[in-house]
Length: 426
Image (spheres, helix red, strand yellow):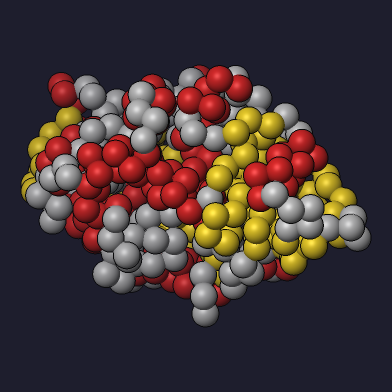
């Protein structure tokens, strides 16, 4: 008997695979990695030896306006251990600098004050100037160039006017950008919606290199990196986190070189080979990444990489915020023929992308390979509208999967955290 614990919201779903044809658990090896220092010590050590860049203190000298791009509420970045050392080093070298923290929401909703407090702590929220990026606020956006994708690059005016632009973040597997972190602080983080749409065009999303763990030849990554350099993102501090959302590794320095080093560490520790199975159970790593269906597509891609053609993906995601995007929902709910929707997307040029199209496109790719049984707190009708089958517990979901497959003992693989593991061949 194998017992597996699956993150679900802020809780865990524990299941005993007794009598099942259980083939294994695909997990990141990060849980086996024990750092010798605390999170804040790791960050400071990385900042002491930046990669491909002078120290932040050197960069800050003589700069009047300094902007720190910080992650928003949808990312489990341990900002409490990253931002304070950055502020300390800046002020140690330039106590008169005007520092602002710019929250990189991308195209997400605004981050609330309570969410800022949870992420940054009461002291920083009370003491520091914090601005939440709005991708649709034209008055506070500036055009700075044309992306390789052909789209116009518009970024937040505060970032453009900064004498020194830096960022914090974390590096994790990303289902079409290869890895998160680094350059993503600019695009999509502080870019205009139109710039994000160009980067996320159907041609790029369908590209065979636009996959988890791939940077070289990935057109989406190349677009993002170009944007970060055009915006003059001078310095980053990025961490890798474990399943407890604790920083276990940190890099600092140049946006490309430091990010690459962090990606190499992550690839070494969270790679898992596919184990083909009829049923694959995945999650989005629990809170905060499983708050809606939109984000849960990421965890499904890990299952997609190992589920057999015609199999079943059981996705566990609390989804207390519902579908996560009206456009995403409508693209799925308004058309019963998923092939028709997919062809509509693929026919659109780079400049014709509509909001949320990329997420729907990837989701449709998954649905063409496997049936998805979705365990959540979302309304059953919403789940059905989005071409999935609702379930209210893991036992119910497994029973439903067996009914779909029409045999009693299908092979099963578990992926406790689908956003933390890269399921790829060696």
